[in-house]
Image (cartoon, rainbow, N blue to C red; front, top):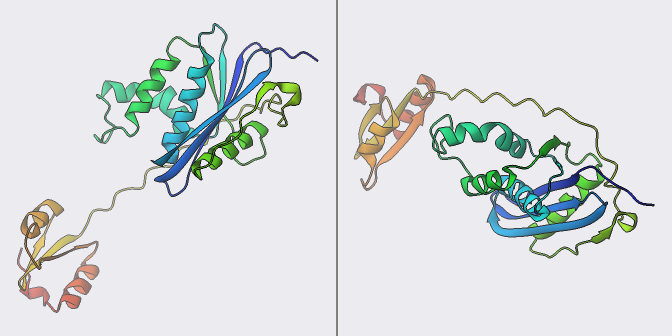
Length: 243
């Protein structure tokens, strides 16, 4: 029986042991004639997010020139939000996050943005480890490579492929982003050099005092009670602390 699709289908997944640690990525590519091709690779020291982006990058790149849409299925919200939402702000801010930090995995994001340029790509979220055949197979390939082994890839017609990847998952909304935990402000920073203890309002001033000083001690206190416990453990009376 012939099967025809009006687009290319790509499943991708990444895996990492330790995060960072040894990792792998896997992809299953289905062309409009329902021919199936598997891909994958690994890295000795990486992160799960890098492997997720790498999987999509390599799979889309492998499709080559096409006027047909590409439907990507991934369980990585990081990948989907990164390429469809965050990347515009990153570029505008010269690859800085909203907090001013360097964007992680910039090299892969730049490569991916070039690969997807001019293509019709639909990014679909599929919940991981829920029995979806394409997602499960990609996870299997990624895990094999994360263990330093080589996977045996399938390439051929859909009719002899052991996974029902043509039963495409229903569309799912991306899970809501978890609100960032509010950063707690320290009550004080304590430094002790030769028995002279100083209370600091911020870490930079504490760091300046103890940096390079042999035998120096320092500690962050999140509350007045915690500060008292630190001083007690150091054998220092609170009235002996200078500002």
